[in-house]
Structure formats: C-alpha cells, structure tokens
Amino acid sequence: MELNDLHPAPGAKRPRKRVGRGPGSGNGKTAGRGHKGQKSRSGYSRRYGFEGGQMPLVRRIPKRGFTNIFKVRYQIVNLRDLEGRFDDGASVGVEEMAASGLVKKNGGPVKVLSEGELGKKLTVKAHRFSKKAQEKIEVAGGTCEVLQ
Image (cartoon, rainbow, N blue to C red; front, top):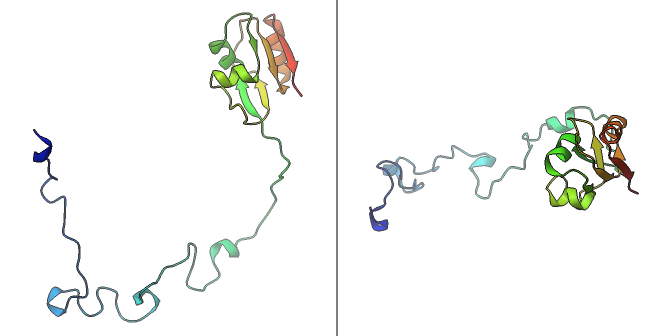
C-alpha cells in the first residue's frame, strides 16, 4: 500500500448539499428553512440558554448560598504517596513533592493526610498535617515541620 493509494471507504464521503438552486433540486425556494420566522433569516444565531423570549430556566430557579473568595484550597498528599516515592531518612518538602509529581509547585499550600501506612523515617515539611498523619509520621520515627 502506498500513500497515493489511500482513499476513504465507499460511502464515507458525501457531496455537500447545495440549497437554493431551483425547484428541480428539491431544495429550492426556501432552501430547507421553512417559511418566515427568525430562523429563516440570514445571520440568525441564538444565544446559549435563549428560550425564545420566555424567562430562561437559569433565571427562573432560586439562587442560594455564596462562594467564599478567601477560602484556602490545600493540595492533598497522603502518607501512602510519601511511602511509595521517598527513601528512608529523606527530607520531604514542597519542592521534593513537586519534583516527584505529588503536588504543583505554585498550586497552593500542602496538607498531609493519614491515608495509608508509613514505614519509613521521613522529615516531612508541609503547611498542615492532620492529627492522625502527624501521629503516624512520628510513630515511624520521622518528624513533622509546619511551614508558614
């Protein structure tokens, strides 16, 4: 098979529909747009969510609550992730976690959670620790350093 032999499967390509070319074509006169009305005009385009002038659904339903723009969103790291990626006795900070793909370097503060087991002595530096995570790290012989 050569590149010049390649062609679409039979029936895969169809000629484009030529509308408005007289009564013999089957798509003459109104060109498949029906009679009159907004949608029959040239240049018609509908805004997303537009319901023909009826009050749109998004404006009919009640609004509740608000979004706190000062909320701090932590990047989550579990102990099982640290166990799998770092060697015994390692010092694990945000830079090391970012280098190993656990967090984004400028993705916000890091919180360590206790999911999984930790059998290595690690010095973990993060912005927050859950109580259980801190206990597990210290039981394994490691230390927790809280960053500001």
